[in-house]
Image (tube, rainbow, N blue to C red):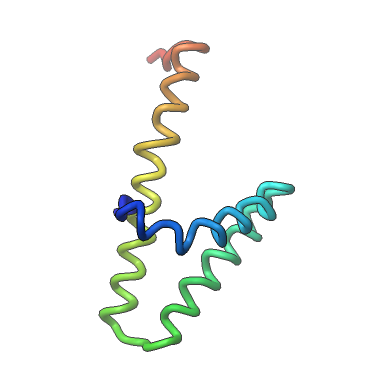
Length: 88
């Protein structure tokens, strides 16, 4: 769940914002994949265990699902309204 207390977000926001600016300038999927992979691999490398690996995979899955639910699905609904739904 990304909804941590606001007081805890400040520690991360400047770093995330700076990285997002760099990536957004010319977004390449491979570069985004690299950044995410490097972060996850660094975290796992600090104290490798099955439990940590399982937690990291769970976090990645939840990020994917929450992004779809909160950002991509509403965008798709807008496009359906603009262009019409699928016809079968």
